[in-house]
Amino acid sequence: MIADLAKASSLQDLLAAEAARFTAEHPRSVAMAGQAAQVWRGGAPMHWMNDWASPSPIFAAQGVGAQITDVDGKLYDDFCLGDTPSMFGHGDAAVAAAVSDQVKRGAGFMLPTATSVIVGRLLAERFGLPLWQTATTASDANRAAIRWARAVTGRPVILIFDGCYHGMVEDAFVVLGEGGAIMKPGLLGQVHDLTATTRVIPFNDLAALQAALAPGDVAAVLAEPVMTNCGMILPEPGFHDALRSLTRDAGTLLILDETHTLSSGPGGYVGLHGLEPDMFVVGKAIAGGVPAAVWGVTAELSGRMDEAQARTGPGQSGIGTTLSGNALALAAMRAMLTEVMTAEAYGRMLVGAQRLVAGLQAVIAARGLPWSVAHVGARVELVFADPLPKNAAEMRKALDHDLLAALHLWLINRGVLIAPFHNMMLVSPVTEDPAIDRLVAAVDGFAGEIEG
Ligand code: PMP
Image 1 (cartoon, rainbow, N blue to C red):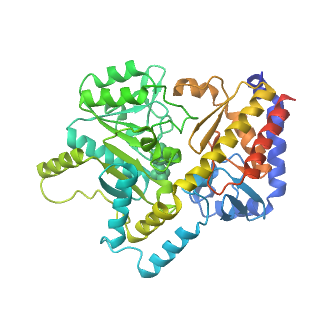
Image 2: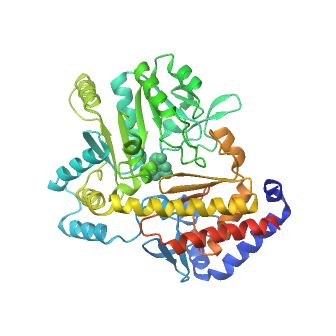
Image 3: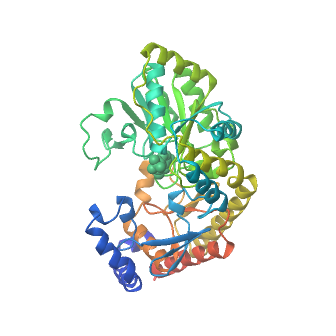
């Protein structure tokens, strides 16, 4: 069994050999890592940059299309794409032109621009919700959505699914432990008991959903349409219909976070499957890498927000952040929505993703591996389990961290980047077939190596 082999010392030997190879082949990155450690706590400007499987970070030089070069001159096929902001490729000409033009005319004024009117209309047309607000990150947008849900309903509790990730959102840092809900292990500096106001249940568990909503104190369910941050967990048939009707019956708002599932199609997963959230959140790719996010609401909810605001009285409570919705972000969003996130681009990325899925499935079949492949649009996940886990408890058993580290480092050394943490691969409209084939061949080579 691969799972058993993965535990064997041969895997540790493989990791050690690959680490040595990385270090030998990346002298400049290694040297820069040493320099960075003197000025950046933890060795990089943001700690996730250290979460890759390589023994020290790869220092990027530039990205073109779906490839990156590093400071050692190595070329990578990039299936991480900045963990989604560059889902449509690096260095897009339309975004570059819009951003550079706007910076010259002023990055932001704390005033709306004519472009903002156009972007609002584009969002409403594309995603179906009529009224929008901006934030600077998807984390911020989710926090705003939660705050408003509580304000509107007057209820304290947020319901989430075990294994979810919605960004730096305290309310969502609760997981199912052995004895029930606990705060996420490793959560630093938290002085409030988040389990008092966050309820957590397994994904795809309608009985648990019904029970969690029953007390009538849940302001909102916050969910990704497909769970993409704990491996990939697909909704079972009928799950979304039931989620919507149960939340409606309970007077609970439904917030769908499309930050990752935007890879499904031009209108996101919501558009593709005709879902009806009360609130819709999307960040990362929406402005092509310029920090920006948006959240939309139904007309009915907007009316209730007005009422909640009227109850609170005049004056705003500082919920906004200065850079949100600035001219630069809006200009980038306009370029993305009109020139980049086109039906044609989605067509290309979905075809590419199918090629990747088929390639990985062929490797699994040919080698008889106990693995499987999940995908939501252009986002593909290789899972070390078969059949696919249907909740986080099952998925955690499949997340063999040594095996993940070995695969990721193997891929890096063969010129392929996939997002750290698990086996998430994103296919952009500018990802070329040979790059997909190289990824599949590298996974095949890895499987051959660990089979011995
Ligand atoms: N929502 C989802 C589903 C995400 O995966 C993430 C980040 N991985 C976020 C929100 C937060 O995005 P950001 O880090 O840009 O705030």
